[in-house]
Image (cartoon, rainbow, N blue to C red; front, side):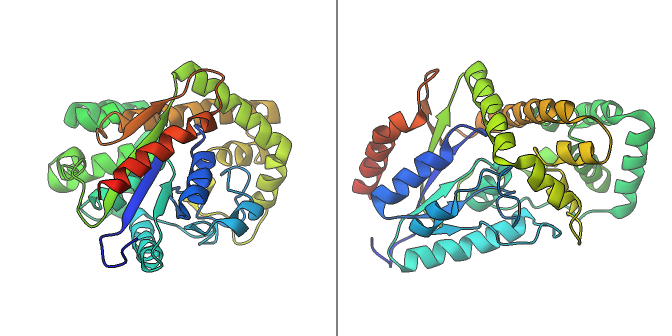
Length: 317
């Protein structure tokens, strides 16, 4: 690969539990590539089972980037991700290698490929007031308010996603403009890289079954013990790390909010909600070429299709 050319990146994306990691690993082996993780939780050390990180054995064979880069007590933003991802891509390209971006954190993917959101900075007083209003009146009240002033954003957010609802209301109060108006750059890919976007897609019921099976495997692999250790660690988890699906539910269990069976069931429910949120975003990303996976078919059965798509793309460069 020409080191003087624009870096080439193949993104493998899709909803949670779709098999992206397995496909990415096979492609990295096939093309002698390096993997850039596009996942907001794999950046945290000590959070391994619940984030479905690749094993150390796999990582000893394939170079990975943006995994285990920050302590779970720290916050990690899209801005930090873009900064570190851009450096990783630069280094991979300097070695004459192809970058394969693997992950389903849409905010990180869009920030890297389309640019960061350019809105006003956070306002502590407004956020505190809106949080208090949510505590007193309920999240649903804030969601209905958002729906009136910014139906576009309300449509793509889950009605219980308090953090993002508050951010959208905050932006409106500060600017008198909906947050969706600041996100007009989304959908316009920048030209810093040559990029190919490939995705794994399932029927909803099929993906839900995969999610339930994966949660069961994580519990069997020791997720409860992993979260117990994190719950008692010092310094404590950052709010971002605590909110991760699979961790938040078990932390609430350890805090006495509900029993273990309820916590496990809520992990499944919230993972399905995450997948629904991802699907909403992906519908707007017309540049992704989707590969549909039939029920009870291993996504790796499609590896030859992925290889062919990449080979044709590279041959045309």
